[in-house]
Amino acid sequence: MRPIQMVDTKNQYLKIKNEIDTAIEQVISSAAYIGGKAVQDFTTALNTYNGSKHTITCANGTDALQIAMMALNLQPGDEVITPSFTYIATTEVVALLKLKPVFVEVDAKTFCIDANAIRKAITPKTKAIVPVHLYGQAAPMEAIMQIAEEYNLFVIEDNAQAIGCTYTYSNGTKKKTGSIGHIGCTSFYPSKNLGAFGDGGAIFTDDDALAEKIKMIANHGQSKRYYHDVVGCNSRLDGIQAAILNEKLKHLDAYNAARQTAAAFYNKAFANHSKITTPFVAHYSTHVYHQYTLQLQNVNRDGLNAYLAEKKIPSMIYYPVPGHKQKMFENFGLNNYNLETTDWLTERVISLPIHTELDTEQLTYITTEILNYINNI
Ligand SMILES: *Cc1c(COP(=O)(O)O)cnc(C)c1O
Image 1 (cartoon, rainbow, N blue to C red):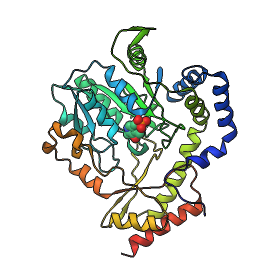
Image 2 (cartoon, helix red, strand yellow):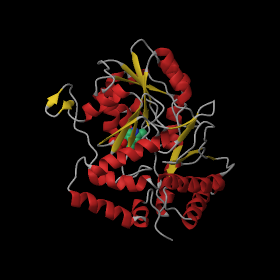
Image 3 (tube, protein in one colour):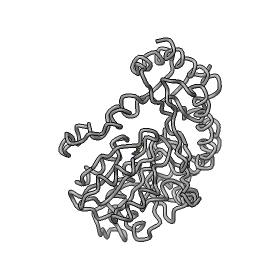
Image 4 (spheres, helix red, strand yellow):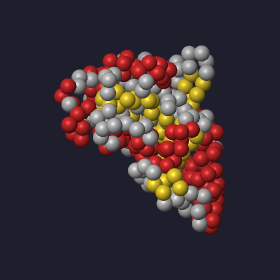
């Protein structure tokens, strides 16, 4: 059996090695390391794929979120509602920009932000909502956009884990996640569903004025070379990463389908087990399984993790400490938070290896060993 990894980017690369190597060589021989044709081509292809009017590439997903928030003219102390149960990047940029992160609950089944919890957290200072399409499934965007409209709030989607995911509105309309809010952000970190061989990110919007502003902010606030209108930053995708991503984008739907096949294998193996809850997929969303995350009941999670490690099966806890318990946010009144669902999930989730290269032999071995441990304690 091939060794099992949480994510296997190497074997994924080997399958399209010629295309990727050629694309990289073209960038090197054209010397367009920053900007240039590869970045333009990828931006155009991604724009078509994700269905927004504008796509702006940048250096990474965290920058994408930061630039999106900088484009909204928010003032220090303005409140931004986000889930506590997410990767730190979502909430860190809020605090970095001197805004106030307001942590709310997620839905215990989908792991995504709870629309009712958003409603309850709104104050006169609330300016934006940042839903996260956690693990590869859409947050309840229709309800979120409704709330945003009602209260005149901006919505920035954190689509770092869900590129390729499709959201279905109650009237049947379908949209890609990242193209629903006022701004969508994504990451091309190597382990993401569309991963570069380094860092990368992108920002989506349908709004012409916001697109201009975002472009400007990502490029030192420059409207014209050496004329800087606003304080911005330096955030760009390099040519080599763009060339790699452009090749991989052609395979993204197949990559996500391979993740779904692996997830279906896991689902079947763990179906109806009293101690294991498999991922729930909401009717309004597809699931692109950036993570395959179980909820355990009456299982010693550390024991399972150690047992699997002994069997050379990696597993991870995403995320062991939610935002409302992070020291970096200690000035934001964390003691006032009582997020029971988030705390409950934090203690019970475990993520299994999920990627495009898992084979039946590996999946059989992983599920057999997990059941061995759980059924024999
Ligand atoms: C990966 C990730 C980010 C940040 O992306 P980087 O490219 O690593 O900066 C933001 N939010 C979520 C939910 C992520 O998973």
